[in-house]
Length: 159
Image 1 (cartoon, helix red, strand yellow):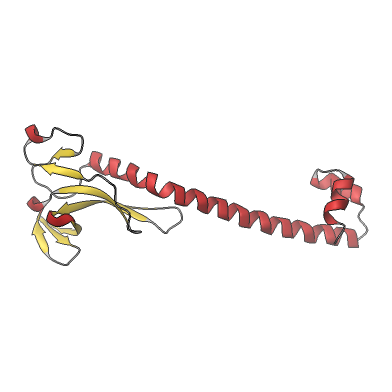
Image 2 (image 1 turned 90 degrees about the horizontal axis):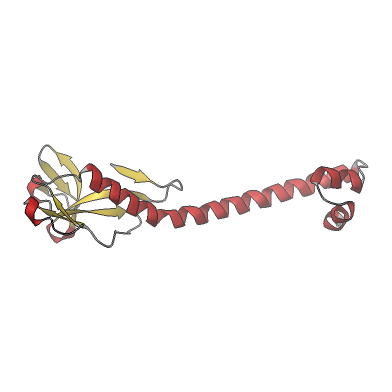
C-alpha cells in the first residue's frame, strides 16, 4: 500500500527490502520484483523501511528475523516467510512518513493561504474602488469591512 501527501508531491510506502538494501516494487505469488527488474523469492526479505518518492528514507529500517527468539530489539521483526510488511510495521512506517511530509504540507498550506489572502485583498480593493465611484461613503465602507471610517479612508484613499 502507498500513501500520497495532500500536496500530491510525496508518495510513500513501507518498502520491502532484500540484500544490499534493494527495494521490492511488486509481488507475484511468492516472488517479489526488485527495482532493477529481477525477481526473488519472498524468503529473501531482509526488512522493511519507510520510503518516499522525494528520496527520503526512514533512518532506521526494520530488520526481519526468522526465529522469534532473535527479535530482541524494537527494530527487529519476526516474520517466517518474508514479503510485504505486516500491518503493524506498515502503520509505524506510515507514521514515520507522515512526520516527514507534514512540514512540507504545512508550508504549502501557508503559501496557499497567502495566495488566497492576496487575491481577497485585491478583490476588496476593487470592490471599495467601485463603491467609491458609485458614491458610497467612507463610513458605509468602513461599517461593512468592520473598521473605522478613518482606517478605511487611510487604507483606500489612493483608489
